Image (cartoon, rainbow, N blue to C red):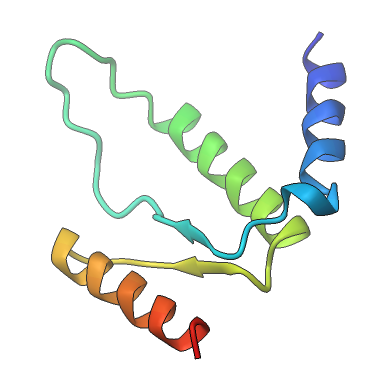
Length: 87
């Protein structure tokens, strides 16, 4: 069931072997496009985003960076952070 799976994920994320060096979080910055293929599920999308933020904050706050802006801006932010961490 869902609660059992949620607990398994929670336990796995807290395991030291699974801790990443860096986690890049891309927040929701724009509305979902109604392209006729996918329904614009804003409540579900927001719930998933909040769940991701919660897990990242609980398990990997020191390795998580949030990047925003255009694709180029996001890439630049990630590269800058990688340079900082490689020193």
